Image (spheres, rainbow, N blue to C red):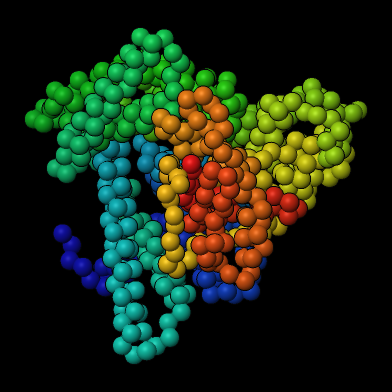
Length: 583
């Protein structure tokens, strides 16, 4: 182990600046941009620059690792500069206001470039061992860098805090934020880059297999995967016996199993190579895991198509479908290759992620076209189009079927949040640029009352709690007590063998289980409006102001959160805790 010294660190920094100059430029550029924003310098914090600097770090790292073994050094510099120019063009042509689709694309690009850094040096034959060793060393160094950065942050923060407490120095929050940038944005990547195996060392055919890596893979991950597989197979047998469709959530579980299994193969790869350490369990697992996985992948496929049939296409569901197809492909590849070239797991995953996220065939383009066409068809079927343009139905002259209205509302809200108004502008004569999803739905007369679709841009928010003052309550006349705890969703909030309690449109309804008769109905609208309008004066209310009493019931509101909609004509409750006494 080399002795630590300032001279050694200066040499390391010099090596980083020579080996990774472009990556270092992006690291320091991102840090500088953070410093400007934290210290409130007058500048326009454009999203384009954040995207350019953030994606540029893994991109230039991957490209540098790819080209550093080229005989022509100028060629490597040229490829780096060309990639930077292409990234600049891509990011600066993004819209000023990023939509969800742009965040998706940037995250996928960052992931692809990060994964590429592990394999770009190992496309040649017989490089599986160097690939494994390089990946293991790089991941460990990344973890060490993160731990060191955390220790450094805690130490410096404590030093600043001690100055504040001992010498009464006024320390602003910006000081800690600046320290975080130094530790996490500057120190972590530079320390990691300084310890990435160099261009000769990364191609060595020797590997080391630390004991803790063996424990992690063989004695922790592998047993968990076996247990997980058993649970999923029991579920598979159950739905076959009952002859029912699988739960849509099964796709997530099978995806985790598949990805976890292939990760475990990668971790334990050396145990299949060394005659001295060769492990029969690992050999069996590597040979037959794909075979075990395939029936579960079929279950996953059924679950995906069920979700697509029930709820339609979204970006997430499209990605899950592609992941399902990739898992099939990589499973068959591992079976045919006898799991000898595991680097192709990572290579193929990065390639599929990239190909499915760029171009007219990307999941974003497919989803946008599908939803846009679906919206056009729904408008046409419900007579909301005239000469190809949507009519103004804000007064509700045309009554839209509730199912069609809900579907149209969901599609417009989803496409608005993920792709913007340009995706559906062709159906409207007037510009939609400054309209919210709620206002577009209002023009069509299909506005939804569901929480997630309601326009809250100019809402009057309120929250109120009951004061802790002493009070007495006579409960002799009541025979049932129910505690209500409602979140943002409406519907059933309580159920037992005797009663069901529903909350819908600011009304609590108690229904007898025996004969489905209404035991009592309590309208909260006037009380909630009163609380919302009193919000400016107070946030705590006494027992009387928070109590509703009527024939056969008494309701005490302990806590309520919500907002009054833009038109000030209705209340949306996001949290309600109350005690209900009924006779």
